Image (cartoon, rainbow, N blue to C red):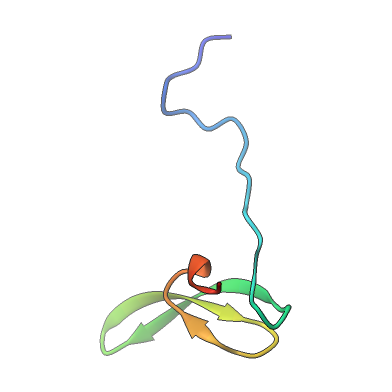
Length: 55
């Protein structure tokens, strides 16, 4: 089975967790005419730019 070097075989979604124990979900905000992607903790409602910032 030949596949191109950029092909994705499985789309694994990483789950991120905040230090409070809540799950981190990505949200899209529309602010000042710009679209911003932010990561938000479901439990404590903390906002960060990336899910990896919740360390």
